[in-house]
Image (cartoon, rainbow, N blue to C red; front, side, top):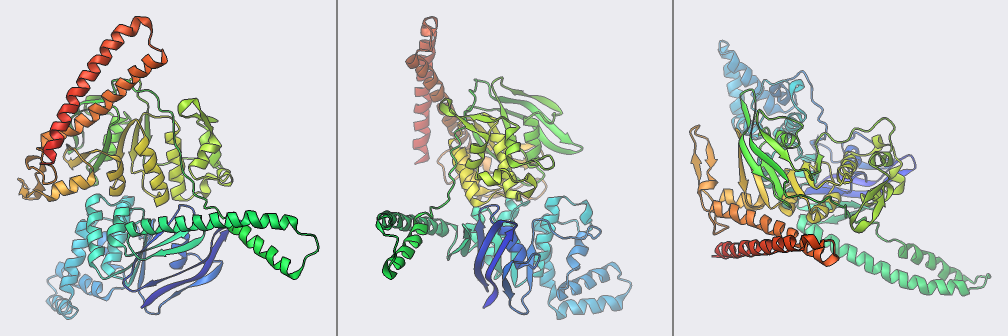
Length: 620
């Protein structure tokens, strides 16, 4: 059954055409992800579908009687209402019955009204519905039903809007980045909910784990054309690669034919026969095909990172509390060269506060943070970029200089750098206020990276970035030689770029887990939950041996640490060897550098031997 059809729509803003001739349909029980680059019209198409905007041409046809709900990036809620009042504000008949019953409970003196409300609960079978909607509120951390909307954070408002939509159970649910402002526990619950429920979905999301587990079809808007893939994210990646390869082969064939036809065109006399005119027309078709190279922008962010000394960043006995809430408690950690750490934990456990302490923008109650002399921190925060009025994209970058140093003594201009960040020459001269949310984040990320940091801190860098940009960012970070510290709820992203985790448990408890996010989930699922003194279930995974590894918890920490130490020693060894080979080591330093190199080689051999010992134990 077709719920909605998008028929040949187009949209332009001034001289700029976002898309044209776009058509697709949404049928009952489909769970569709809509994928496109930032700035190509995803949000505009969602707005058109929901009647918040209108296409220049074409139309959207919605089946009569279909109940459709839209979760936008900026939910439309009434500030003066409470959480409970916001939920009951819908025209859902069962919710009205529950609302009447809830009010009757508050006024038990009116027994007649209570009995009528009770009978209606039976009549509409509302008891199960009430249980379900309260479970949704609990899972989305919205238990305070009397909290007013005007006092809620942006994340809480987004969760409330999501809860209202889920409770109302529409026939068709349109979602714009539903996992933003959800912690990992909430995201995994929402995945399970959507996977089990018979619900029709059409969503824009950059969360590739979510795509993989929830969606059974992907619609891609690429260079103004629609492509449909009947499968999940893995299937989409495979088929897209095949499509691009096929297109490139077709273009290569057209280019070869174009060269032959070009020679023929040049030989033609000015007088044209009907036959030659027809062939000339074909020539121009071939020419268009041959010149339709895919405009794929591949970033090559070979930023020249400053040298790191032996001291990176040290945190000694750091503690911080806000009123009675403990954020950090006697935290100690010495960062090593080349570390790649992910930070996970529920909302409110202090992840962003930890980053502010680390960067010394917030002072702890006790303890100290020591930053090495050679360390240059690049900090990507959630606050984003603050452009001046009527400032252009190119001006933002030029504030940091006309040229940026690359490796091997090369440089790149501000304009060339922006091109590599997917801003073409025309886009560079747009006013910043014209950029989409994802483009603003991409520009902000560029401003952080061009400052040449050797210790990079990223707080939720994947929010609002499209999948194309995420792949670009991941490829850059995989080659990034400095220290990396990332807070993110994007599990796919974390799995690719980090090698161990700081797990924020709350109440100042931070655990160092030796592995990525998927390793952590397997670890947690492989142990028995134990009861703590508050009778809440808590996984005591430190005291259990995991199924995945044949190592104790302490051995896993040692294994992860050794890998980082080996990397550090190899770097030191290469630096000294390069000094000997290029003649930068003076005669006076020959002996001391030789002894230093010998000591590094011996230590490296010891570490490698222990690494092999632990590695073989893992395979038992």
